Length: 583
Image 1: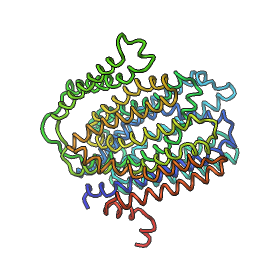
Image 2 (image 1 turned 120 degrees about the horizontal axis):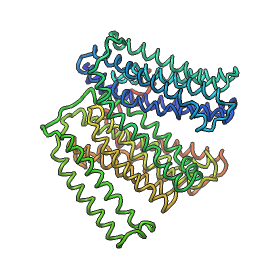
Image 3 (image 1 turned 180 degrees about the vertical axis):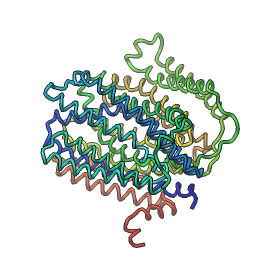
Image 4 (image 1 turned 135 degrees about the vertical axis):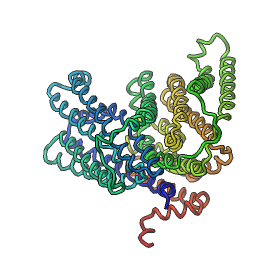
């Protein structure tokens, strides 16, 4: 079997392994939290959380590096240049060692400021310093040696990498329980974290060496050519990753600033379950980057945009987005007071300008090169189809059973969280289908598509979330988020369909229609929750489990009967453990 066929064959199993590993991780952490709180005070638990808030800023430095490992390991494997993978890994290790050394030095100098800034009590500052610097050392080692993990991903062995991280995570849980029971206190969490890192690194090193016996790390293999990959391709991914972090926090920033801390807390309650479901769905995306990098594809024509032309494209995208976003805002009472003329005139003028700019963009896009690759086109369509099916099952149930889920989780004192949860479930279910798309283009080094998409989403959120919050409170904010994500998703789908020359009807039937199937059982499930509301956590749990079982079985039956083709059914059966055993 060729490397290309092997990459395509492993895509689905790799994606499923990512989902299963994430499920195990989330469930284990959910069950572990009450045990930790039994041994630690809230302040100690908050201190441990603070460590990872600080480390998240260092983690931003790894965005581009990790993607560079995956993309170029896949490319070198496809081209039969396995010896270059050692050069890539050696260069990445040296680069991240320098980065982490600078980060640790800066963090050490900033410790007095951090103690004051985060209101750490004087009695806790010694422990806080140990925890923060200790986790920084462990995390830095993870960043430096994490290349083994992502090299495995680049060789399309996600399932093996997930197996190592899952086992190491379970061992960490056992170590946490043991250290806390022995009286280690909050430092026991640090010891367990370090143990997990050692196991993960050794496991990934062993698997990487078994897959590629020639793999090694040496300063002699440091290469300026590969360093350019980390600064070039990796730098572009780095910018996108930082923009992504900004987008994940912008909603809570606006809501808290406009409506106060209580509204921010209520929004967080409504966001929690959709966010967890989104984490499960997005865990399947990883293999798309390495698979796309392996396939690469060919472009037709020789019309490549200059940097100046790309800048004009980004500017036109931004202006058209702002114009179309302003049109509905013109009707809000607070905005209407500032307009020198009728709201309808302002809205029509803005919409007209937006449509004109979109027409200019459409003309520009039609002159661009097209990607001719049957494999990548299939990967694109199947990726969105697969993601939409998963999303429809996860978020369809959250939408149908929103009120019972909120009531059984946090009680009946937070009614506004239900509407937030419904709107965010709609938003995430639509927006998550862009995951395979952006990673596919990242894999073939066309990050401009993702930048355009994120530019549209950022501008829409900046304009619509404050407007929606001021006009309709939390519900308006959640609706604005859903609208922003939906419009930006439609934009990147429009751009991507043009790249592959895919017709609207073909895309809808293959990739969108399957996601509408779970609506059929979702409607009666929602009716049951509304017509026969339950009180008391036990009754609510029984209702949720019963309706959930009915929803999943009905949706799976309909998908099997009317949506999945023979190849997809065969692949699904292969993934069942009992099928393998009987075979």
